[in-house]
Length: 270
View 1 (spheres, one colour):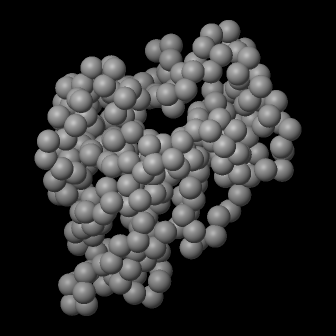
View 2: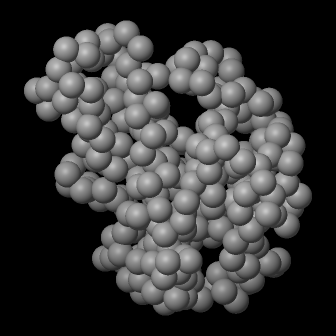
């Protein structure tokens, strides 16, 4: 995603948006037994599927995570409505399996700063007129379930499973601590909101109707999202998306949504 900043004299001091890499950090876990079928990224995986996938990953220890994602999507012929490989979904599936201790992925590798990483999440980087990085915004898959969000949209489980790809999660938003520009955060969110639907359609072959994000309420106030006209619709239940047995406790977060077009509810409920 590349965005043009306002013209000189706007007061922001920024010229261009560039793509650069954002690497989430995950804990390495040991393998655990699986005796039931899992549903991850909309795909059902039974014990034999997981055993085969684990063996396949182990047979290619020198492949990068990016290549594993591409090869897995090709192996499964996993494609979107436009016929493009769903390598992003494949990468997210592999990461979730590693988080659960079911597979072991190779170490992450550095990605050149001028290339978008296709495997997990598109990242928009912001640089100033001297090409110094000042901020980063990352988007990824929406939360599988979220009671207050789902109530706000008004969709039952069947429609949620069908149309969840039309919702995108702002998973990271960082303004570097030494940057002091008034209203920069809300301006960035506004610029991204104006372009993300078109860019997502071009990249992944389907539109985006709604943006979501989750703000840890004990640490942050969500001021930048409110200033950018995102709507607070509730709070999370204090569970992780990996918590299948309601035993993990995570911080409660405020839920913010931003509709990219009118009539988004009708589209998501269809």
